[in-house]
Length: 349
Image (cartoon, rainbow, N blue to C red):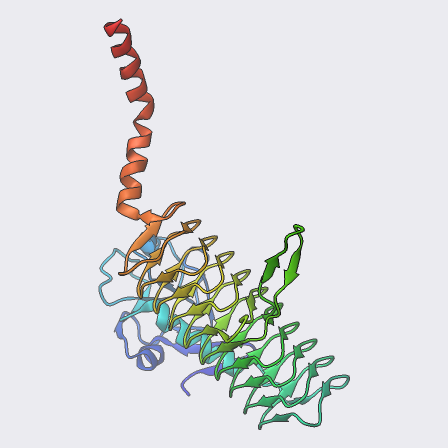
């Protein structure tokens, strides 16, 4: 390791950073930084980054000592700033932040007092269980799993290696969580789907939800997101999916590999999202439709129909974004058109 630890920060030179990131160094190789900061707030001795071209003007005003930038970066920059040019600045920043996190965070180990583990359950090496957590019958937990306080793990749940489950998570019985997952506080996995059969007298009879939730490896689920169990079979979240905070995933939904969904979105029952789909915040999906791989859905879109090919959708009801923008442009002209029509009517009279 090239970095030298200083309290909770890291002191590291530009040359060492360039070596770690396999980047091209432009400037002073000996200059050092000991902290990270946003480009508009960075001070001398700190590292920042520019990944979006709209922030390139900060190259002339920032006080950062080192900037991570793209290899295509050619914007004007202060002479005092050292650049490290990499393929993907945001990805390189993530690598560095991960290094610091590992070096500064003390690993959690052992079972804290006032927690409960049923004697039929098993857990692997380097296990951590926080206080007031509960683990039910026949639970199988892999190696290096961290379960924080006040978490509930129901009967017959399976959890893969290296998964982190933060405080206050509730995982209902028979659900499966893959390896290398991160589940943030307040998440509920395996709650009953919204299944009720209407009766002749106007009341509703509950339909038992007998399935489960299966979450594959490398999935991250944001705080207070809820994933309902299948009515029959599984609600399926595939490998590499990233879910933001406050999302509702209904019963028997399937979400394909590496799909990302932003906050407050909702997916209705039995809808299937393909792989590498991108969903903006507050988007909503009706049930029983299929969204093609690679589809992009704008924030606050209302998706009422499936897609056969990768498209970009916006609006409610959602439509192709080019068509939606043409309609918006026409709507802006409506007052002028109304005035012209009124004038023509008067002339005709």
